[in-house]
Length: 412
Length: 89
Image (cartoon, rainbow over all chains, first blue to last red; front, side, top):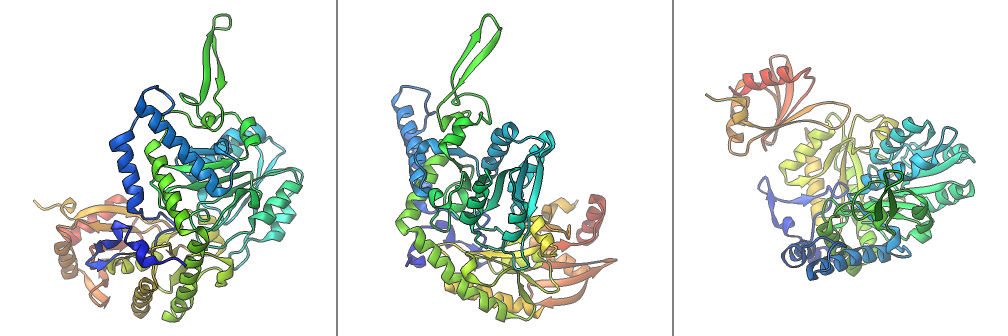
Protein backbone atom coordinates (compact mmCIF):
# COMPACT_ATOMS: atom_id res chain seq x y z
CA UNK A 1 0.00 0.00 0.00
CA UNK A 2 1.48 3.37 -0.92
CA UNK A 3 1.37 6.44 1.28
CA UNK A 4 0.16 9.39 -0.84
CA UNK A 5 1.01 11.89 1.92
CA UNK A 6 4.64 10.78 1.94
CA UNK A 7 4.71 10.78 -1.86
CA UNK A 8 3.30 14.32 -1.99
CA UNK A 9 6.42 15.60 -0.22
CA UNK A 10 8.35 14.78 -3.40
CA UNK A 11 6.15 16.97 -5.61
CA UNK A 12 6.99 20.66 -5.21
CA UNK A 13 4.07 21.84 -7.36
CA UNK A 14 1.52 20.30 -4.99
CA UNK A 15 2.50 22.89 -2.37
CA UNK A 16 1.25 25.81 -4.47
CA UNK A 17 -2.14 27.46 -4.38
CA UNK A 18 -4.44 28.25 -7.28
CA UNK A 19 -7.04 30.98 -6.83
CA UNK A 20 -6.00 31.14 -3.17
CA UNK A 21 -6.92 27.48 -2.67
CA UNK A 22 -4.63 24.46 -2.22
CA UNK A 23 -4.02 22.83 -5.59
CA UNK A 24 -5.91 19.61 -6.30
CA UNK A 25 -4.54 18.11 -9.48
CA UNK A 26 -7.05 15.71 -11.06
CA UNK A 27 -5.87 16.05 -14.67
CA UNK A 28 -3.37 13.22 -14.57
CA UNK A 29 -4.65 11.54 -17.72
CA UNK A 30 -3.43 14.66 -19.57
CA UNK A 31 -0.07 14.84 -17.88
CA UNK A 32 1.36 13.96 -14.49
CA UNK A 33 3.24 16.19 -12.08
CA UNK A 34 6.99 15.63 -11.58
CA UNK A 35 8.77 14.56 -8.40
CA UNK A 36 11.87 16.42 -7.27
CA UNK A 37 13.96 13.31 -8.04
CA UNK A 38 13.08 13.64 -11.76
CA UNK A 39 13.61 17.41 -11.75
CA UNK A 40 16.96 16.94 -10.01
CA UNK A 41 18.09 14.21 -12.44
CA UNK A 42 17.43 16.50 -15.42
CA UNK A 43 19.16 19.42 -13.67
CA UNK A 44 22.13 17.20 -12.82
CA UNK A 45 22.40 16.02 -16.41
CA UNK A 46 22.56 19.55 -17.80
CA UNK A 47 24.86 20.79 -15.02
CA UNK A 48 27.31 17.90 -15.06
CA UNK A 49 27.05 15.53 -18.04
CA UNK A 50 25.54 17.35 -21.03
CA UNK A 51 27.03 16.39 -24.39
CA UNK A 52 25.85 14.84 -27.62
CA UNK A 53 25.57 11.05 -27.56
CA UNK A 54 27.30 8.46 -29.76
CA UNK A 55 29.28 11.21 -31.49
CA UNK A 56 32.49 11.90 -29.69
CA UNK A 57 35.26 10.20 -27.78
CA UNK A 58 35.46 12.79 -25.03
CA UNK A 59 34.48 12.11 -21.44
CA UNK A 60 31.23 14.07 -21.38
CA UNK A 61 29.95 12.34 -24.50
CA UNK A 62 30.77 8.97 -22.99
CA UNK A 63 28.86 9.87 -19.83
CA UNK A 64 25.87 11.18 -21.76
CA UNK A 65 25.84 8.10 -24.02
CA UNK A 66 25.96 5.80 -21.02
CA UNK A 67 23.06 7.62 -19.35
CA UNK A 68 21.06 7.57 -22.57
CA UNK A 69 21.59 3.83 -23.07
CA UNK A 70 20.86 3.13 -19.41
CA UNK A 71 17.52 4.92 -19.86
CA UNK A 72 16.63 2.51 -22.68
CA UNK A 73 17.67 -0.42 -20.48
CA UNK A 74 15.57 0.81 -17.55
CA UNK A 75 12.49 1.18 -19.75
CA UNK A 76 13.06 -2.23 -21.36
CA UNK A 77 13.09 -3.93 -17.96
CA UNK A 78 10.06 -1.92 -16.81
CA UNK A 79 7.82 -3.32 -19.55
CA UNK A 80 9.43 -6.75 -19.93
CA UNK A 81 11.08 -6.13 -23.32
CA UNK A 82 13.95 -8.40 -24.34
CA UNK A 83 16.48 -5.57 -24.52
CA UNK A 84 17.20 -2.03 -25.63
CA UNK A 85 16.91 -3.09 -29.28
CA UNK A 86 13.16 -3.14 -28.73
CA UNK A 87 12.95 0.32 -27.13
CA UNK A 88 12.82 3.33 -29.46
CA UNK A 89 12.75 6.76 -27.84
CA UNK A 90 10.38 9.19 -29.53
CA UNK A 91 8.65 12.43 -28.52
CA UNK A 92 5.57 10.69 -27.15
CA UNK A 93 2.78 8.25 -27.87
CA UNK A 94 1.64 10.22 -30.92
CA UNK A 95 5.04 10.05 -32.57
CA UNK A 96 5.39 6.37 -31.67
CA UNK A 97 2.13 5.51 -33.47
CA UNK A 98 3.04 7.73 -36.42
CA UNK A 99 6.35 5.88 -36.64
CA UNK A 100 4.53 2.56 -37.02
CA UNK A 101 1.90 3.98 -39.39
CA UNK A 102 4.53 5.43 -41.71
CA UNK A 103 7.54 3.13 -41.38
CA UNK A 104 5.57 -0.12 -41.17
CA UNK A 105 2.23 0.92 -42.71
CA UNK A 106 3.56 2.60 -45.84
CA UNK A 107 5.65 -0.45 -46.68
CA UNK A 108 3.27 -3.21 -45.69
CA UNK A 109 -0.30 -2.09 -46.32
CA UNK A 110 -1.73 -2.28 -49.82
CA UNK A 111 -5.15 -1.65 -51.40
CA UNK A 112 -6.73 -4.95 -50.35
CA UNK A 113 -5.37 -4.86 -46.83
CA UNK A 114 -7.27 -3.78 -43.74
CA UNK A 115 -6.38 -2.12 -40.47
CA UNK A 116 -8.79 -2.39 -37.54
CA UNK A 117 -8.99 0.49 -35.10
CA UNK A 118 -11.42 0.94 -32.21
CA UNK A 119 -13.89 3.82 -31.85
CA UNK A 120 -12.63 4.53 -28.36
CA UNK A 121 -9.17 5.54 -29.57
CA UNK A 122 -7.44 8.82 -28.89
CA UNK A 123 -7.09 10.77 -32.15
CA UNK A 124 -3.39 9.84 -32.16
CA UNK A 125 -4.36 6.22 -32.87
CA UNK A 126 -6.88 7.16 -35.56
CA UNK A 127 -5.48 10.06 -37.57
CA UNK A 128 -2.10 8.53 -38.57
CA UNK A 129 -3.89 5.47 -39.95
CA UNK A 130 -6.42 7.60 -41.84
CA UNK A 131 -3.58 9.68 -43.36
CA UNK A 132 -1.54 6.66 -44.46
CA UNK A 133 -4.62 4.85 -45.79
CA UNK A 134 -5.26 7.79 -48.11
CA UNK A 135 -1.79 7.35 -49.56
CA UNK A 136 -2.03 3.59 -50.13
CA UNK A 137 -5.77 3.01 -50.27
CA UNK A 138 -5.99 0.25 -47.66
CA UNK A 139 -9.21 0.04 -45.67
CA UNK A 140 -9.71 1.01 -42.05
CA UNK A 141 -12.46 -0.75 -40.15
CA UNK A 142 -13.65 0.45 -36.78
CA UNK A 143 -14.54 -1.97 -34.01
CA UNK A 144 -17.49 -0.81 -31.96
CA UNK A 145 -17.99 0.21 -28.37
CA UNK A 146 -20.83 -0.97 -26.13
CA UNK A 147 -23.19 1.51 -24.44
CA UNK A 148 -21.19 1.30 -21.22
CA UNK A 149 -17.98 2.20 -23.07
CA UNK A 150 -16.49 -1.30 -23.03
CA UNK A 151 -15.09 -2.76 -26.22
CA UNK A 152 -17.55 -4.69 -28.36
CA UNK A 153 -15.52 -7.87 -28.85
CA UNK A 154 -18.20 -9.35 -31.09
CA UNK A 155 -17.88 -6.44 -33.53
CA UNK A 156 -14.11 -7.00 -33.57
CA UNK A 157 -14.49 -10.71 -34.16
CA UNK A 158 -16.82 -10.01 -37.08
CA UNK A 159 -14.39 -7.55 -38.66
CA UNK A 160 -11.16 -9.47 -38.30
CA UNK A 161 -10.17 -11.60 -41.29
CA UNK A 162 -7.18 -12.74 -43.32
CA UNK A 163 -7.18 -9.26 -44.86
CA UNK A 164 -6.48 -7.70 -41.46
CA UNK A 165 -2.83 -6.70 -41.22
CA UNK A 166 -2.84 -4.69 -38.01
CA UNK A 167 -5.17 -4.13 -35.06
CA UNK A 168 -4.81 -0.86 -33.12
CA UNK A 169 -6.29 -0.53 -29.65
CA UNK A 170 -5.74 1.49 -26.50
CA UNK A 171 -4.95 -0.56 -23.40
CA UNK A 172 -6.93 1.92 -21.28
CA UNK A 173 -9.40 4.44 -22.70
CA UNK A 174 -8.29 8.00 -21.98
CA UNK A 175 -11.96 9.03 -21.66
CA UNK A 176 -13.57 6.27 -19.59
CA UNK A 177 -10.57 4.60 -17.98
CA UNK A 178 -11.89 1.24 -19.17
CA UNK A 179 -9.17 -1.41 -19.36
CA UNK A 180 -9.38 -3.41 -22.57
CA UNK A 181 -8.66 -7.10 -22.74
CA UNK A 182 -5.63 -6.57 -24.96
CA UNK A 183 -4.43 -10.15 -24.52
CA UNK A 184 -7.66 -11.52 -26.00
CA UNK A 185 -7.66 -9.08 -28.93
CA UNK A 186 -3.96 -9.72 -29.60
CA UNK A 187 -4.52 -13.47 -29.70
CA UNK A 188 -7.36 -13.12 -32.21
CA UNK A 189 -5.29 -10.69 -34.28
CA UNK A 190 -2.36 -13.09 -34.34
CA UNK A 191 -4.63 -16.04 -35.23
CA UNK A 192 -5.49 -14.09 -38.37
CA UNK A 193 -1.88 -13.19 -39.14
CA UNK A 194 -2.25 -9.55 -38.08
CA UNK A 195 0.00 -7.45 -35.87
CA UNK A 196 -1.20 -5.84 -32.64
CA UNK A 197 -0.41 -2.23 -31.77
CA UNK A 198 -1.38 -1.01 -28.33
CA UNK A 199 -1.61 2.58 -27.13
CA UNK A 200 -0.31 2.27 -23.60
CA UNK A 201 -0.39 5.99 -22.73
CA UNK A 202 -2.99 5.44 -19.99
CA UNK A 203 -1.86 2.00 -18.81
CA UNK A 204 1.93 1.99 -18.50
CA UNK A 205 1.91 4.85 -15.91
CA UNK A 206 -0.84 3.25 -13.84
CA UNK A 207 -0.51 -0.55 -13.71
CA UNK A 208 2.00 -3.34 -14.26
CA UNK A 209 2.43 -3.81 -18.02
CA UNK A 210 4.45 -6.62 -19.54
CA UNK A 211 4.67 -6.76 -23.32
CA UNK A 212 5.32 -10.49 -23.31
CA UNK A 213 2.25 -11.27 -21.20
CA UNK A 214 0.06 -8.98 -23.33
CA UNK A 215 1.39 -10.53 -26.53
CA UNK A 216 1.63 -7.20 -28.35
CA UNK A 217 3.86 -6.36 -31.29
CA UNK A 218 3.99 -2.62 -30.66
CA UNK A 219 3.37 -0.62 -27.49
CA UNK A 220 3.40 3.18 -27.46
CA UNK A 221 3.52 5.40 -24.36
CA UNK A 222 4.59 8.83 -23.12
CA UNK A 223 7.06 9.84 -20.43
CA UNK A 224 5.17 12.91 -19.29
CA UNK A 225 2.14 10.91 -18.12
CA UNK A 226 4.35 8.76 -15.84
CA UNK A 227 6.20 11.43 -13.84
CA UNK A 228 8.77 12.06 -16.59
CA UNK A 229 9.34 15.20 -18.64
CA UNK A 230 7.47 16.18 -21.79
CA UNK A 231 9.04 15.46 -25.19
CA UNK A 232 10.13 11.89 -24.45
CA UNK A 233 8.12 8.76 -25.14
CA UNK A 234 8.61 5.16 -26.09
CA UNK A 235 7.82 2.80 -28.90
CA UNK A 236 8.30 -0.83 -27.98
CA UNK A 237 8.47 -3.06 -31.04
CA UNK A 238 9.33 -6.73 -31.33
CA UNK A 239 12.90 -6.94 -32.50
CA UNK A 240 12.20 -9.07 -35.58
CA UNK A 241 9.54 -6.61 -36.76
CA UNK A 242 11.66 -3.52 -36.16
CA UNK A 243 14.56 -5.21 -38.01
CA UNK A 244 12.38 -5.60 -41.09
CA UNK A 245 11.01 -2.05 -40.98
CA UNK A 246 12.66 0.78 -42.89
CA UNK A 247 13.47 3.92 -40.85
CA UNK A 248 10.91 6.64 -40.18
CA UNK A 249 13.18 9.70 -40.22
CA UNK A 250 16.53 10.06 -41.93
CA UNK A 251 19.59 11.89 -40.65
CA UNK A 252 22.48 11.43 -38.26
CA UNK A 253 22.57 8.66 -35.64
CA UNK A 254 20.25 6.34 -37.60
CA UNK A 255 22.87 5.44 -40.20
CA UNK A 256 25.96 3.25 -40.06
CA UNK A 257 27.34 4.31 -43.40
CA UNK A 258 26.65 6.93 -46.08
CA UNK A 259 28.98 6.76 -49.05
CA UNK A 260 28.96 8.46 -52.41
CA UNK A 261 29.10 6.04 -55.32
CA UNK A 262 31.11 7.49 -58.20
CA UNK A 263 29.33 5.26 -60.74
CA UNK A 264 25.71 5.87 -59.81
CA UNK A 265 26.39 9.40 -58.50
CA UNK A 266 24.18 8.59 -55.56
CA UNK A 267 24.75 7.91 -51.89
CA UNK A 268 24.38 4.40 -50.64
CA UNK A 269 23.20 4.09 -47.07
CA UNK A 270 23.44 1.38 -44.44
CA UNK A 271 21.14 1.71 -41.44
CA UNK A 272 22.39 1.72 -37.89
CA UNK A 273 21.51 -1.13 -35.52
CA UNK A 274 18.38 -1.10 -33.38
CA UNK A 275 17.10 0.99 -31.74
CA UNK A 276 19.23 3.83 -33.18
CA UNK A 277 17.91 3.11 -36.71
CA UNK A 278 14.71 4.81 -35.57
CA UNK A 279 16.27 7.67 -33.61
CA UNK A 280 17.43 10.15 -36.24
CA UNK A 281 19.22 13.30 -35.14
CA UNK A 282 20.39 14.38 -31.72
CA UNK A 283 17.98 12.73 -29.29
CA UNK A 284 16.32 14.19 -26.20
CA UNK A 285 19.01 12.98 -23.81
CA UNK A 286 17.89 15.16 -20.91
CA UNK A 287 14.35 13.85 -21.38
CA UNK A 288 15.60 10.27 -21.41
CA UNK A 289 17.47 10.83 -18.15
CA UNK A 290 14.28 12.27 -16.64
CA UNK A 291 12.25 9.32 -17.88
CA UNK A 292 14.77 6.86 -16.41
CA UNK A 293 14.44 8.52 -13.01
CA UNK A 294 10.63 8.48 -13.34
CA UNK A 295 10.68 4.74 -14.04
CA UNK A 296 12.94 4.16 -11.03
CA UNK A 297 10.59 6.22 -8.87
CA UNK A 298 7.57 4.17 -9.99
CA UNK A 299 9.49 0.92 -9.50
CA UNK A 300 10.33 1.88 -5.92
CA UNK A 301 6.62 2.40 -5.22
CA UNK A 302 5.65 -0.74 -7.14
CA UNK A 303 3.16 -0.72 -10.00
CA UNK A 304 0.77 -3.04 -8.14
CA UNK A 305 0.62 -0.43 -5.37
CA UNK A 306 0.02 2.34 -7.93
CA UNK A 307 -2.86 0.36 -9.41
CA UNK A 308 -4.33 -0.46 -6.01
CA UNK A 309 -4.17 3.17 -4.84
CA UNK A 310 -5.99 4.42 -7.94
CA UNK A 311 -8.61 1.68 -7.61
CA UNK A 312 -9.20 2.66 -3.99
CA UNK A 313 -9.61 6.33 -4.89
CA UNK A 314 -11.95 5.52 -7.78
CA UNK A 315 -14.06 3.24 -5.57
CA UNK A 316 -14.23 6.06 -3.04
CA UNK A 317 -14.99 8.82 -5.57
CA UNK A 318 -17.54 7.19 -7.89
CA UNK A 319 -20.50 6.63 -5.51
CA UNK A 320 -19.87 9.98 -3.80
CA UNK A 321 -19.83 11.80 -7.11
CA UNK A 322 -23.07 10.09 -8.07
CA UNK A 323 -24.68 11.02 -4.74
CA UNK A 324 -23.41 14.61 -4.72
CA UNK A 325 -26.24 15.88 -6.93
CA UNK A 326 -29.07 14.57 -9.09
CA UNK A 327 -27.54 16.62 -11.88
CA UNK A 328 -24.31 14.60 -11.94
CA UNK A 329 -24.07 11.91 -14.55
CA UNK A 330 -21.16 9.46 -14.73
CA UNK A 331 -20.36 8.30 -18.25
CA UNK A 332 -19.30 4.77 -19.13
CA UNK A 333 -19.28 1.77 -16.86
CA UNK A 334 -19.42 2.31 -13.10
CA UNK A 335 -17.98 -1.15 -12.53
CA UNK A 336 -14.61 -0.24 -11.07
CA UNK A 337 -13.25 -3.74 -11.69
CA UNK A 338 -13.29 -2.86 -15.40
CA UNK A 339 -11.58 0.50 -15.15
CA UNK A 340 -8.75 2.50 -13.63
CA UNK A 341 -8.59 5.97 -12.10
CA UNK A 342 -10.34 8.00 -14.80
CA UNK A 343 -13.89 9.22 -14.19
CA UNK A 344 -15.77 11.02 -17.00
CA UNK A 345 -18.87 12.92 -15.96
CA UNK A 346 -21.27 15.72 -16.76
CA UNK A 347 -23.56 18.11 -14.92
CA UNK A 348 -27.01 18.59 -16.41
CA UNK A 349 -27.51 22.13 -17.71
CA UNK A 350 -23.81 22.97 -17.72
CA UNK A 351 -21.13 22.46 -20.32
CA UNK A 352 -18.04 20.51 -19.32
CA UNK A 353 -16.04 23.76 -19.55
CA UNK A 354 -18.36 25.44 -17.06
CA UNK A 355 -17.79 22.55 -14.68
CA UNK A 356 -14.01 22.78 -15.15
CA UNK A 357 -13.99 26.56 -14.63
CA UNK A 358 -16.16 26.22 -11.54
CA UNK A 359 -13.75 23.67 -10.04
CA UNK A 360 -10.78 25.84 -11.09
CA UNK A 361 -12.11 28.57 -8.79
CA UNK A 362 -11.45 26.15 -5.95
CA UNK A 363 -8.00 25.19 -7.17
CA UNK A 364 -9.23 21.87 -8.56
CA UNK A 365 -7.85 21.02 -11.99
CA UNK A 366 -9.83 18.69 -14.22
CA UNK A 367 -10.04 18.35 -18.01
CA UNK A 368 -13.05 19.26 -20.16
CA UNK A 369 -13.85 18.74 -23.84
CA UNK A 370 -13.39 15.78 -26.16
CA UNK A 371 -10.06 14.69 -24.64
CA UNK A 372 -8.91 14.09 -28.25
CA UNK A 373 -11.46 11.27 -28.54
CA UNK A 374 -14.34 12.77 -30.54
CA UNK A 375 -15.60 9.49 -32.06
CA UNK A 376 -16.16 8.01 -28.58
CA UNK A 377 -18.12 11.14 -27.56
CA UNK A 378 -20.23 10.63 -30.68
CA UNK A 379 -20.95 7.06 -29.55
CA UNK A 380 -22.06 8.44 -26.18
CA UNK A 381 -23.97 11.27 -27.96
CA UNK A 382 -22.09 13.86 -25.89
CA UNK A 383 -20.99 17.35 -26.90
CA UNK A 384 -18.08 17.01 -24.49
CA UNK A 385 -17.32 15.61 -21.04
CA UNK A 386 -15.61 16.59 -17.81
CA UNK A 387 -12.92 14.18 -16.62
CA UNK A 388 -11.27 13.65 -13.25
CA UNK A 389 -8.21 11.42 -13.28
CA UNK A 390 -6.15 10.28 -10.30
CA UNK A 391 -2.54 9.38 -9.60
CA UNK A 392 -0.21 8.35 -6.82
CA UNK A 393 -0.22 11.72 -5.00
CA UNK A 394 -4.00 12.17 -4.83
CA UNK A 395 -5.81 11.62 -1.54
CA UNK A 396 -9.29 10.93 -0.19
CA UNK A 397 -9.31 14.44 1.32
CA UNK A 398 -8.85 15.85 -2.17
CA UNK A 399 -11.73 13.72 -3.42
CA UNK A 400 -13.85 15.07 -0.54
CA UNK A 401 -13.05 18.66 -1.57
CA UNK A 402 -13.93 17.79 -5.15
CA UNK A 403 -17.25 16.25 -4.07
CA UNK A 404 -18.01 19.33 -1.96
CA UNK A 405 -17.63 21.58 -4.99
CA UNK A 406 -19.69 19.21 -7.15
CA UNK A 407 -22.50 19.61 -4.58
CA UNK A 408 -22.28 23.39 -5.03
CA UNK A 409 -22.28 23.07 -8.82
CA UNK A 410 -25.39 20.93 -8.54
CA UNK A 411 -27.16 23.85 -6.90
CA UNK A 412 -26.48 26.24 -9.80
CA UNK B 1 -6.45 54.89 -24.05
CA UNK B 2 -7.78 51.65 -22.56
CA UNK B 3 -8.04 48.70 -24.97
CA UNK B 4 -9.43 45.16 -24.82
CA UNK B 5 -5.81 43.93 -24.77
CA UNK B 6 -5.32 45.67 -21.44
CA UNK B 7 -7.70 43.15 -19.93
CA UNK B 8 -7.59 40.02 -22.08
CA UNK B 9 -4.72 37.58 -21.67
CA UNK B 10 -6.01 34.81 -23.93
CA UNK B 11 -9.04 33.92 -26.01
CA UNK B 12 -9.26 30.17 -26.55
CA UNK B 13 -11.72 28.07 -28.54
CA UNK B 14 -12.95 25.21 -26.37
CA UNK B 15 -12.50 21.57 -27.24
CA UNK B 16 -15.86 19.88 -27.84
CA UNK B 17 -18.87 20.17 -30.06
CA UNK B 18 -20.06 23.41 -28.42
CA UNK B 19 -17.36 25.59 -30.06
CA UNK B 20 -17.44 28.11 -27.22
CA UNK B 21 -14.76 30.69 -26.56
CA UNK B 22 -13.10 31.11 -23.18
CA UNK B 23 -11.72 34.55 -22.38
CA UNK B 24 -9.05 34.64 -19.71
CA UNK B 25 -8.36 38.05 -18.19
CA UNK B 26 -4.90 39.28 -17.23
CA UNK B 27 -4.17 38.68 -13.54
CA UNK B 28 -3.35 42.36 -12.89
CA UNK B 29 -6.57 43.72 -14.38
CA UNK B 30 -8.98 40.84 -13.90
CA UNK B 31 -10.77 42.32 -10.86
CA UNK B 32 -11.39 45.52 -12.79
CA UNK B 33 -12.64 43.54 -15.80
CA UNK B 34 -15.01 41.48 -13.66
CA UNK B 35 -16.32 44.64 -11.96
CA UNK B 36 -16.93 46.41 -15.30
CA UNK B 37 -18.77 43.43 -16.76
CA UNK B 38 -20.93 43.02 -13.66
CA UNK B 39 -21.86 46.70 -13.90
CA UNK B 40 -22.75 46.61 -17.59
CA UNK B 41 -24.45 43.24 -17.98
CA UNK B 42 -27.69 42.08 -16.38
CA UNK B 43 -27.35 39.45 -13.69
CA UNK B 44 -29.67 36.48 -14.22
CA UNK B 45 -28.26 34.08 -11.66
CA UNK B 46 -25.17 33.73 -9.47
CA UNK B 47 -23.65 31.30 -7.02
CA UNK B 48 -21.51 32.24 -4.03
CA UNK B 49 -19.73 35.05 -5.92
CA UNK B 50 -18.01 32.41 -8.01
CA UNK B 51 -20.11 32.21 -11.14
CA UNK B 52 -22.46 34.78 -12.65
CA UNK B 53 -24.92 34.07 -15.43
CA UNK B 54 -25.26 37.32 -17.31
CA UNK B 55 -27.15 38.85 -20.23
CA UNK B 56 -25.83 41.65 -22.39
CA UNK B 57 -27.53 42.84 -25.59
CA UNK B 58 -28.47 39.57 -27.34
CA UNK B 59 -25.83 37.52 -25.59
CA UNK B 60 -25.97 35.39 -22.48
CA UNK B 61 -22.79 34.09 -20.91
CA UNK B 62 -21.14 32.98 -17.68
CA UNK B 63 -18.49 34.98 -15.87
CA UNK B 64 -16.23 33.35 -13.27
CA UNK B 65 -14.80 35.22 -10.32
CA UNK B 66 -11.35 33.84 -11.18
CA UNK B 67 -11.40 36.10 -14.27
CA UNK B 68 -12.72 33.89 -17.04
CA UNK B 69 -15.79 34.04 -19.29
CA UNK B 70 -17.37 31.41 -21.51
CA UNK B 71 -18.97 32.98 -24.57
CA UNK B 72 -21.30 31.02 -26.81
CA UNK B 73 -22.64 31.28 -30.32
CA UNK B 74 -20.18 33.82 -31.65
CA UNK B 75 -19.82 33.83 -35.43
CA UNK B 76 -16.50 35.60 -35.89
CA UNK B 77 -13.48 37.20 -34.27
CA UNK B 78 -14.92 40.64 -35.12
CA UNK B 79 -18.09 39.81 -33.23
CA UNK B 80 -16.01 38.66 -30.26
CA UNK B 81 -13.95 41.87 -30.29
CA UNK B 82 -17.07 44.04 -30.55
CA UNK B 83 -18.65 42.28 -27.59
CA UNK B 84 -15.51 42.52 -25.45
CA UNK B 85 -15.14 46.21 -26.36
CA UNK B 86 -18.71 46.89 -25.33
CA UNK B 87 -18.19 45.07 -22.04
CA UNK B 88 -14.78 46.47 -21.14
CA UNK B 89 -14.05 49.80 -22.82
